[in-house]
Each structure stands twice: as C-alpha cells, then as structure tokens.
Length: 358
Image 1 (spheres, rainbow, N blue to C red):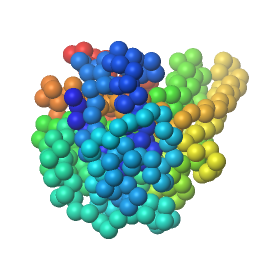
Image 2 (image 1 turned 90 degrees about the vertical axis):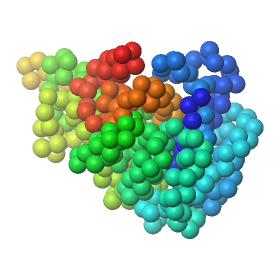
Image 3 (image 1 turned 135 degrees about the horizontal axis):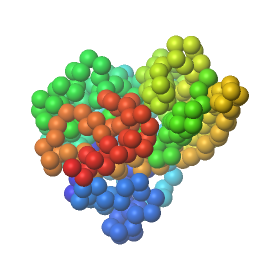
Image 4 (image 1 turned 180 degrees about the vertical axis):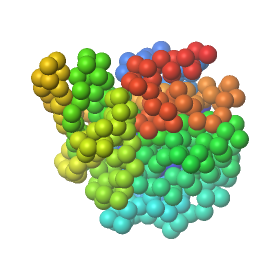
C-alpha cells in the first residue's frame, strides 16, 4: 500500500478519497477514466489515506469518510464507504483562512505543528499532500517542514512555490534528506491550463505568432470564493500564466501586457463546475489573422483528483528507488509550475515516461 496523508480536507480531498474507493469497489483491473493505469507496480487501488489535517470545527475529530461531506464541502457522494478509522486531526491555521472565509470555514484554535509531525510518524505516512486553500503561503511551507521532520515525501498541489522555489530552499532541504518533492500547483486531467497550452503549442507548431490571449475561469465552490481576494491570487496568476507562456518562444506576451489568466468570479450555483473561456489570437501566413475561442466545462475536483492519483504513485516509485529532491520529470507533466517547464505537454509526457521506465 501507499500510505498518504492530506493537509486540507476540502472538495479535492473528498473526490480523491471517494475516487480511490470507487476504483477499489470496481476491482484492481478497472482502469476507465484513469490517466495511467499502472505506474511502476502501483495501481490506484494501492493508495490508502492514513491521516488527514484540517482547520474546520465541522471536520476535526470525524472519520474522513464523514468529514469530507461536512460544510463547506459540496462534492457529491459518488460511492458508499465504510468508516476508515482515520480521524481528522487539527492543523495549524496560520494564513490558511482568508478574513472573508472565517465564517465559512469555522476554524479551530491554532494547532501545533509538532502534533502534525507526530501524527505523520504514528500513521506511518509515506507521502503528505498539500491541498490547502490558494494563498496559504505560510501554512504550506509549515506543512512542507513537517514532512521533512517526519521523513515523508511531499506533494504540493497548490500555487505556493515549494518544488519550484526560486531560492531553492525546499528543493535543497528535500534533496539533503533524500525525500521526493513534487509540485507546484496541480494540473487538471483535461483542465483550462492544459487546453490553453495545447492551443498555444499548436499555434507555435504551425508557425502562427500568438499576439494576445486570455483565460477566464469561474466556479461556485469554496476555492473560487477564497480567490475573490486578489492578494491570495498572486502566485496563482503567475503559475497559470507561466504554464502557458512557457509554450512560446519568449515572454513577449507578458512584457507587452497581452496575456491575462486566472480566476475571474465566484458563481455559487455552479458548485464544483468550473467554466473556462479561452481566447487566443495570432497572425499566420502573410500576416493574416487567426483567432480561436473555446469554452471548457468540467467538474473541477475530479479533474484534480485524476492527476493526484498518478502523482502519488509516481512519488512512491521515487521513494522505492531512493530518489530525493524535486521530481523534475513528474512535476513537468502533472503540475502547472514545476521546477523546469517542458515546451509542451507531449515533451512533458516523454520526460515522465522516461522517469517511470528508467
């Protein structure tokens, strides 16, 4: 089994936990809907959640199979589950709750990170997944340090730059302890970022210069409500923007202010449905204009969970092989802001396959 812990038991965690159970109930050879059926020797049915941390009074102390349906979560029940015997432990609040989200999250009194470290050790966690709200800079780094102290690998699924830390603090620390580090900011299975990257890559491949582009996203869950505050969006915009501009020859779009990407609004009735509007305009043969407009509608949380189950298994392969530090190849394929960006997702996939098959 692959023993994982989750920091932040929100809607993505709900879909991840339910999704693992969904595939277990259908048998280990049922692969429909998965990106990669087997990674190394591991299937999705090998994943087991052994610990969870949250700051909401609605969830702390409850079994994870119950906590994932507590408010403000809105992910629907897709499978019946028996209790797992894994209770949600309180985590440190720090900057994990925006001022306008206090009433929504109903936070506990701040917990000590030492308790988190001990729980990781007691549960024999191998991989800690960071699923805190966007903008949780201090809290994310605190959990990363807890992973180091507990000697567990770390997957950073949100746009806080840990694996891609420009100062190399965390990459160096995880390398020294020979612990795998994957991130940052999880892509979707078929999400707005990967669709946008595909369009700009196509323009480049076919000799069309991208002149301007935008991506507007709306949704109705707490993720979008949390991101109504622009201060919490700073790294999110960087992450999504760099994921797209990395497919082009240089950063002229950013220099000239011809690109805008990021969450645009919170629309409650959309629930977990994310709607993305993508516009790309370029100039082709003899300077003639080319314009593409696309709309994508997806279940935001299943989109993320589909990628996480691959990332978990890839990190476990690294653990088995004694590989520590940032997992460059895996991160390039599964995350928006990896330590090193591939030129396009086909190249990133080749890197990932090479890593798995080495």
